[in-house]
Image (tube, rainbow over all chains, first blue to last red; front, side):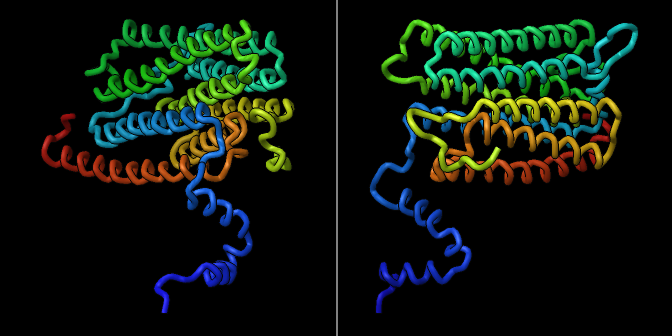
Length: 238
Length: 114
């Protein structure tokens, strides 16, 4: 009597389960990768570390957004109408969320130029990589500039403070400044990161060790765009 | 958009045809416009929330799978990054219940104060 199935029996058991059998090579590979005393992640350490950092950042932003959900659900005062608060007065009419929409498109455009930069980097086209990364950084900087405009408009004209505002629930200000402030900080850091890597690419710093650094920088930048997708949906549109 | 997961990462890193990036880029623009339209045309109630969530998840999915090359990464990485996210979902559930309780307590004991 064996308490655990022997190796041969184990294969039979696995093969007898239809769902496992259908994708047996997939699960087999997964088990092999995790189970044996060997390298689990077939990635460069730089890329793996960036992914793990982004996972931890996902948790931070999730906690901010969950905190926002919590205070918004439990507020007894009415929540300010974001559509009106963030409207922009253009040509005698209030266009709802105009600035936010422009910021969204700018960030998506920058994600596109970043993807192109990664592509050019692997083709070892350093000049194009540099230009595209700088374009991405400029778009990111303009995003931060618009955010500064949005903040000053909200603070000076609308009187929004982290502890109170004239439009409704007091929690609106603290959630807004925390979430968009932390995201804006990420964009600012990304702009610096992109600029540094872009100049290093141009100077030939990666000629010998390869251009995966551009892809890793791109991961960070796309993540910043990804977070904005969630902020746009939950904070501005909800 | 599909048909090349096998040829994924050869050489030093993730290399994919530039046309794929353009397609995703255009899709992201369209989806963003549509989520903006949800607000612009004043959709309300469940229709609004459903549309917001659908467009949000589509955009997030495109960015993660294509721009961040998640679709072509090894399954060990997918598992290591995907499983912890379940904890976030659980936490959302907890905090929603807690917020509901706080709201009802405020209505009962604080008569309209925040």
